[in-house]
Image (cartoon, rainbow, N blue to C red):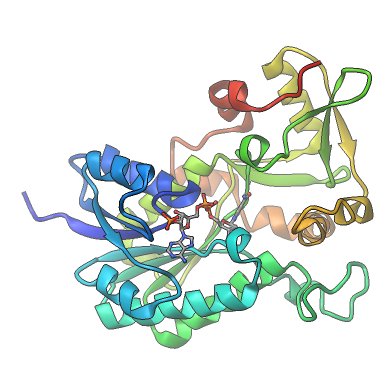
Length: 318
Ligand SMILES: NC(=O)c1ccc[n+]([C@@H]2O[C@H](COP(=O)([O-])OP(=O)(O)OC[C@H]3O[C@@H](n4cnc5c(N)ncnc54)[C@H](OP(=O)(O)O)[C@@H]3O)[C@@H](O)[C@H]2O)c1
């Protein structure tokens, strides 16, 4: 049997990279082996990956030399940044540059960059439909990633941009699930008006990335947009009602109200939802479901995701 090609996965202990890590490990006769990259090889998640057959290597996105060591000998690299840890597009761009330079130096043949749109291409800073944040961004956690796309090109790494979408798993882990109103009924709050929100089971981000690595060079230089389904808030509430066995009402939260909720990043997320709302046609068409299903035939719909995960959605007691 030919020797397996190593895929180095940044974020293997997290949501997106974890899905890719599991896809590689599950495909025992497949062409790839997993090198899980983490800052802490002795964490429970890193140990679990090692127990499952992964090589675990320590590196830090802030340290280019550590990344070069971690990428050496790898065929592929899956690269992401975690805005919600650093709250800074500047740091995300610096980390993207570190990954690009390290991958170039290590001779990585296929890099997947988990990215999002630079929304300023659609909403310039002087467009006052939404506030400018951090002085030069509209949606900081999008814009920094979108701006970083050019870094991988500039450095000359064979790259596929993976344009991700909203995780349904945010209903479990990001406090975005239905909430109990004072009268005990369940309300699903989302600032999407009547527009469709492209979203995905986070596991399918990893599976799609895996299919792109398997597809190989045909994807280099391309942007692949992914989602599991495009649904309105009302459609999501209706699927939630069915899955949870009690009525869930959609509440289309106004963007300004969402921006003012006060939690860290509320303004960024408020602008993000407004971008998805105002540019629905573009945003959905960049994530075509049929093409994603052709790439990843196990692609889950919201209903499928709910069937598997509904019990994990925290609901305040009535
Ligand atoms: N939530 C959504 O709906 C959504 C949708 C699309 C895109 N995104 C984007 O997804 C990104 C986060 O990805 P995720 O949800 O997969 O993250 P996650 O589950 O929070 O995990 C973060 C991962 O990144 C690794 N990491 C973070 N900082 C690192 C550093 N300095 N050096 C090395 N590794 C580092 C962590 O590894 P260790 O801790 O083991 O070192 C961990 O595996 C964010 O930038 C967000 O904007 C989110």
